[in-house]
Length: 272
Image (cartoon, rainbow, N blue to C red):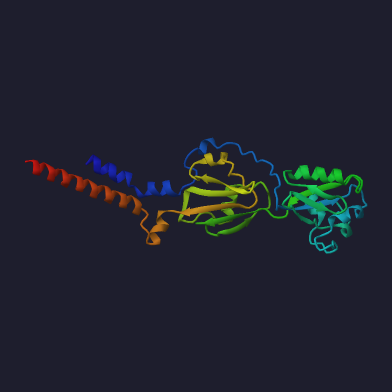
């Protein structure tokens, strides 16, 4: 009777659901402080650089704010709204976009090539400010990502490319943008792939344990790939037996054991 009760308790479907689907089951009372690291640009990153003169003569900076089409007269947003700097409407500009080339450089008007790869946003802004010392008086340099995105694939509600407004995004932000995991997503085995130095690094995340916050994969970097695998329930809907390998091995073991018993019995009988 005790064995039967113990078996029924261990098979409690509610406990099984909690174990398979609930996030943050462990370590919720000791979540560490999140310290975001400043991202350093790499090859192929798309960034914008806006130059604002420190005087009323904003035309001094206009050359460096030309859009990719070479025309900065059609303005869709105000500089003041983004920077807090009040400027005449006629001088408001759209920050041009630069793609860091495979050697790690961008090329700006007049000042030429600048090494951007390996620098943070602030470091690149300081470098551009130094280069513009003879061109623009007391310039304010604003460096931003033109796009900050990741790819979320697998068992989420809206798989595809997700975009972030801030470069301080994390794995939970990415999954939320993708609509969260669906009922078929494996909470305990999420894979993040990140390209670094020409090769992919792979991380595994278990959302049931808050220790993943300490992982390098917690903070998202541009072009990360996040994959959520399918759980047993999804495999069942595809008419795939998720326990096939286990059952197959068990059957082989059983057959081998029976063969050994029969063989032993035959040998013993022959001796008698």
